[in-house]
Length: 365
Image (cartoon, rainbow, N blue to C red; front, top):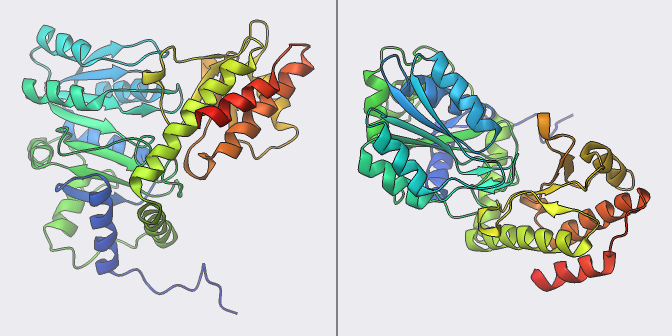
């Protein structure tokens, strides 16, 4: 018996290359795009291990947990690391980046997360890219959460290494990712004797065996289902229109924030200023005396499919995340999520205004 997900014709090199071109268009880049066969941590680590080396100095911007991970990798590669730590309830500014680069002119690499879904903030990449370019450093951007949710202009912003994943705003699988690589980045990787080679982390292997070879033969068997799912994601984004997809995410974020404030009960936005809030996830601070993990568990009792989770690690007791991305970036999901949180707060004896919250969502959307 045939099965549509199992009995598939082989994915050709031409089809693989065509999907790469579609990703490049999504990123507004003329740079090479490499689609990596794994979750986005694969190309993120590959970029850092390819670009960092003993004797190099990196500015690592920490606005959430992924920035912390990047710092660990950079140090493991022998680089000197200057951490620019920003409170998780806000965003870094271009002026702060500029000051760090002036104070440390030896910095030759900058790593930044565009949108931190884990903490709910987003950073102003356009202005930051201009500053980094002026100082001559190589610029790596984690755009896994931001791609398709907010503007992402790789070439115009001077991003040398831009990593994306399909599992958030694109509404696809976690098992495939991509990275755009500028000519400056290829030069740096090639000049680094410590860069991975003959390794699954090696971008240089992809360049040698795939790009420089004319993209005629894939270096290994592709993750076929994930590649087809990525292609389908691009179909869906192009059909809906990228501007419409981004507007839907912006509406979800604004409506969730407005609805949470109207709900009351001590539930407040974790990110203080709305312009610093990411369009993919709204983080909320639990009321005083209420454990966020317990509140989320109660909220999910009626509908476990809602995109609600508690914060990670040390934030588990205080932060609630409403993950309104991809297919969950809809008005009904936002309304249902806030209604579930309101019901859960009511179980603690906390007074909330469900009607006001629902009205705020409808008016803001």
